[in-house]
Length: 607
Ligand code: ADP
Ligand code: MG
Image (cartoon, rainbow, N blue to C red):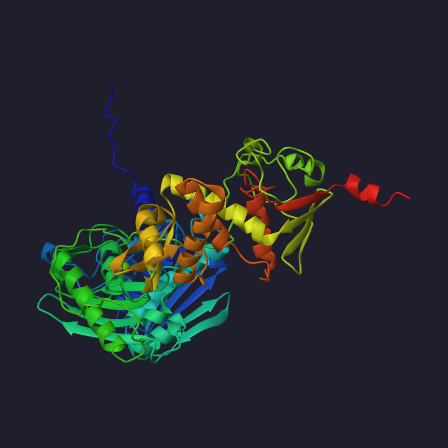
């Protein structure tokens, strides 16, 4: 048998490499922008059409290329940035692999015009799927313009793999913003579908952040600036009150290159601890400058993954630099004396374990539907309470004798997809009127929410998964001796309900977090109400501790009948209710809803 191993044709090898470097239009944008910066441009224009799928153009006023370089740069491993292996360890440019242009050319139709300052004529080049179609002199301004048309036109599989235009455009914005933030001294102009969408004049970092991230400016941005033996850290962090529930604008750069490093993000997050809730995220734009030989950017072709030699030390420095600037900021007297917080601005060099992430995080919406798909709801099985008035289970709003008896078969109400209603409106007194499948429902909102919360607390208590909302400022609550003793004896169970609470002193507890119910919840009122309800139930119902606590909690935290609800709050509440195992009644037997069928309606109007 003859030999079977062959070298891959150059064009196929380039396509394979392209798979790594050019994953989507935004990757091509990134490479082209970085090349323009490496070429010392101070004005860069980016043109995008159709989310970059049909047209990407980057025009710069940088150094330009000679006629030969203009042809050479499209070859794989063609770079002006590395001459010796040694150079790999002192890189100060973005590029160095000489791979980007070859990869882009392998999967698109490219056109380039480039001219150096000293040349009177520039060079024009057209390449299709790696083949040079045109190479001739051209009249053009100093600098380089590269146009990438019909990306992935020769790899349909990749093209089909792209997300929606809005998502691909979002990715392009991400890349553009990263580069724009890192180089405020360069002017950037972005055109989307031939419309000038963003024009960023040359400026200083603070203003660039305001221009790019749309921040209000002054006051909101706290400057950081520290030079140590290992590195220089500079940039801005958003002040604590601008932290958000979403991890949004968090930018870290190392030697001008955007990096993704969760370890350092964590350092910043911990510096904010005690000033913002655990599930909030600050925004920041932070730059590290350090000896290039101390970082390895060679670990991933897209080069956002970077390895640092001294990452543990950098973690500590970063954290204390930020603490320091936050400390200066919070020294201004805007906290009142009752607010306790623990803030330590000293540098601590304790060994920090990687990914020692904050405890429980929740982006909790009290009315969101917590529903798993697949199982179907049998709508018709929701009982008609009008027909139950004589049954054993329901006793006209009094507490049922046999409250543990299920009113309806539980599995019928297992979680399912989101329900929509023909109509919902709220009537004074806390009644939600809704119709679905030709039936009319009257639901008491307070009871409905209590039912929903009861189920949720039961479930979370059982699995110990209650989401905790960490308080911005811990709350100290004092009780009388009797209540203190009661709370103390229930402390473990109370924690399972989602309270982060501990003994604080004589007759006092400190609450650091409460069950994630809603943003307006007052930790002290919730705890006091819980204890009051608990006592009442203890006297009247002789419930076991857990059942009592859960019922008290649900009772106490449910929305009131006087609250006005938005349409989506009503919709979500009804969704949760109708997916409850027992939507009809509260655990104490009180009715939650009434159903009027078409038949009943008809009967109302018989002459
Ligand atoms: P790398 O950036 O890793 O060197 P590229 O494939 O991105 O590899 O680019 C190859 C070479 O082409 C660069 O090293 C540079 O000399 C030249 N080049 C690319 N883009 C430009 C530009 N906009 N202006 C001037 N020279 C450029
Ligand atoms: Mg490059």
